[in-house]
Length: 92
Image (cartoon, rainbow, N blue to C red):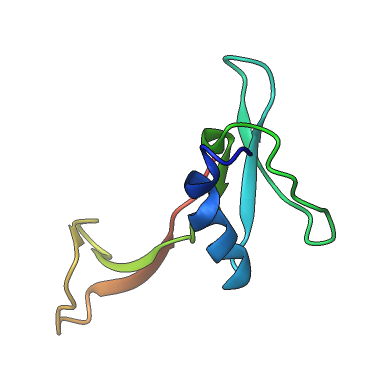
């Protein structure tokens, strides 16, 4: 981090203050992936800002599936033929 790009790290620093988790991009070109920072680890911000991110929070939502036709709906239906399914996304 330099005085010329310090402003790009401000959202990351604020996220740390707010108790959010950060991730760093690691791995060779073409095979890179996001890794969580260990909470006990010091973050030096030695790499460019694009190599850091606030860890995305998993989203969850509810869908309904008809137990006979397997039709999917995003809204609750009063018919007892519909099964409530809670879905949570998977982040890579």
